View 1 (cartoon, helix red, strand yellow):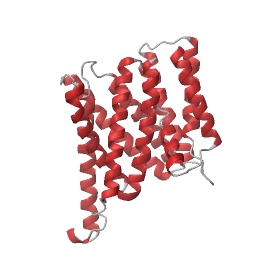
View 2 (tube, rainbow, N blue to C red):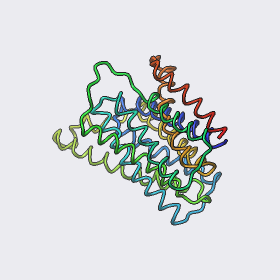
View 3 (tube, rainbow, N blue to C red):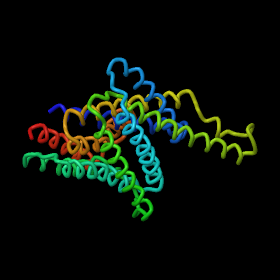
View 4 (cartoon, rainbow, N blue to C red):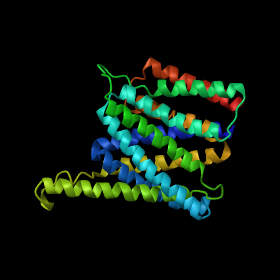
Length: 292
């Protein structure tokens, strides 16, 4: 089933984008990294437009622009809740909510499976929790505020997938271009406000170490993250048009798999046994979905 392969591939690419973006955020800050990634992703989509094509209709632009707004809120809530922690609880919570929301929408909208398909979706949801688990020493119970933001992030990520699923079949990458344009405008506006506030706090335009944090390497990594993220969006959009929202939503939620695999290869970070179990369940679920 092409949609299953596209769902798994998009999850791996998304996870890779998160990994590269996380490294970039350490160098230039999460806000700047996200803003740079929005521009590089937009550039990639514009370059691909002559090859892929797409009809510029009000529906394509409208749904794409709305998904850009929703996506910006999702990223803000995700970063905010993970900053509070503990990630070991909030990360898998966000991932599973981001799968359940569009899964429920798809099933209400008419997505149907054989029995093995429903079993596979259940196994995949368990895999999402296990793969997204981030072991932390001395992790404490999350606050109500952190839990609400984690659930909110998951809801908005799920809503992003639902909105992409509404785009016309003949729109090509047009919705994603609208998405990136809106997302980039929002992120750079926030960056501008942050820089102005930082300069004011430091005593004027000439005083700001904070305002001069765009390093060459950090910006390059952020740009690479944006390209990967945009590529994942293309894979998701193609997968939604080839398959169904329910399947894609659960498989895309496995994106932490790409992050932990790259972290293990590049940074030599240890993959926890529970995450290995999650990866194995994810492969098994994908196989069952392909056979459903």
